[in-house]
Image (cartoon, rainbow, N blue to C red; front, top):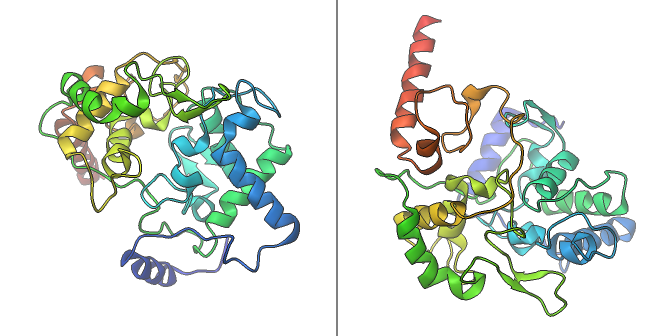
Length: 312
């Protein structure tokens, strides 16, 4: 850990708040060289073309579903508001409530392999893991330890006053998503038939129900600020908030691989409001936790926390 104090962290974050985080570029980076530079270049290739190396027909190993890491971490984790890696090196290792343990970057990478790529973990001693680690570290260069730069997260959408509607979401999907992701959410394969040019959004080749994007709040904000791809942006979204929530409900109500998540959230009071699998520490149904409305759950949690604070 660095010697950065709280005042320095606040100043650093305030300076970054004026504009979104920007990823470094190897074209202008004259410092990273030799073995480190080669690792960064290989790491970026692995993030961008994961299936080429580690997919069902991978040249290194066959441990994932054919999707690429950058299907969820846009531009190989370098796009602002695109689920990027800007704050990964600065904030890991850290305690994660989902596992109830301290996790390092290697564990975080393997979480993506197991969940988003519906595959198997990568040996942490491999050249590939070392390269992805080096790349993620490089992407976060210049970010002080403990700082989460503005634009390094997905962002957040306000909860609707109603439940998100898969039926309404189907109309949004048909109009705006189907042309790229397919009528059945199957995505589009590259000519090599070994990887996807456009990722599948459901079915056997998509992310499983343990992935981060299976939570409606994550999927909704991801599509709101990034989809249709290379058309929408945070400053110029193509979807309304309601359309984003509804299309998230539609996509995530479709069939996909299941992951045993009984070990997740060992302290169930820490489960996110929209985590769609029980048991819960509140009186709301699994269906409401999956689709909403989420405001009543949020208000209930606030009330309970207030009561506990008063007792203490």
